[in-house]
Image (spheres, rainbow, N blue to C red):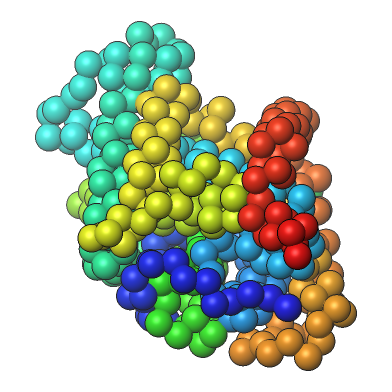
Amino acid sequence: MLETSKKSGLRKELGAFDLTMLGIGAIIGTGIFVLTGTGALVAGPGLMLSFVIGAFACGFAALCYAEFASMLPVSGSVYTYAYATLGELIAWIIGWDLMLEYLLASSAVSVGWSGYFQNLLAGFGVTLPDALTAAYGARPGMHTLFNLPAFMIALAITALLAFGIRESKRFNNIVVAVKIAVVLLFIALGVWHIKPANWHPLLPYGMGGVFHGAAIVFFSFLGFDAVTCAAEEVKNPGRDIPRGVIGSLAICSVLYVVVSAIMTGIVPFAQYAGVDHPVSKALEVAGLDWVAGIVNLGAILGMTTVILVMTYGQTRITFAMSRDGLLPKVFSEVHPKYQTPYRATWIIGIVIALIGGLVPLGTLAELVNIGTLAAFSLIAIAVIVLRKQQPDLPRKFLCPGVPWIPALAILFCVFLMAQLGSLTWTCFLIWLCIGLLVYFGYARSRALLANAGARA
């Protein structure tokens, strides 16, 4: 039987609205403000379909997530769910994969944030020394050494999270509201400048381009799973977590499709080559430079909340793994005043900041998607397994169409994994091997649940 009564000391502050905003805060960021241009180059106007495919893959997985989160309201996201159904080794593997996802995603977004921030400063005539604008070798022809803005924003977010979920919640809700307003402003003004001829041909590279685009823009949907990491800080997790997961994903999916349609309708997709600010680029082509400036500011705010939620998710996964004995105890120590895993937050935050400062964006982006797709596949398998093993277990939310919906989640995720390059697979397998060495060399002998079972 699943254990759901653990006492963690974490403060219960979040409701359905907060969780939906948390999910939107994680999802809308680099994907909509940066990757839409990259996706358009490989999918053309068919990028709209790429987002639909990505939304379906995440949607099927979200239904599986929601079922587990509603009956197992503890920190740790898919790691905890896998532990309860598929055993300790599988749980360790997926937890190890999620650490890779959240660490690199946070660092990658901090680098994207840095680019927009430097562009904003340049508009006011302020520039940083070349050595502090990017990681070593990130900009050919420039002597770059360290990405100072990326490092600083990661540390600032870390400090905010260390002070408490209440303060982080308020900040996130305010910024998400501003971010949504910016996206809606782009839609409201940009729709009048669409040239339907730019949508022809709709699929210049066929369905292969659409699938390739889906594998790229899948990164845009990362973050809805971070909602489930907050389970122990939710007032009514059985009701609110499914609402937060599904609500945030649905809202963001609609916005992505609409924004990509407008972007490719204003600017021929080939003109997005080498553009790292595609949304504001579309507005500039439409003659709306003043709106483009607002969108640049919105992009900075948008990516700030992504860093916040991804870093938050990372700290809660390590918190859960540490509490189970699989990681050192320092990662599950809770501050007596702020009621947060403060030491873990600072350790993880410093690592994220250093990666963002020292590693180029292109390198970071290689590994983000594959760990997430593997996690989504495993949670879908876990839903089928648990329905078979414990059909009478109380569930406040039921994933519909079991086993077909989970099977579709697995199918979509494995298909998208197959679209990723050999370098990504090689690095992923190396990371997995390191994780297995840590598990058999350290975690297995210290696992609290396994040792308790042996003593019994």
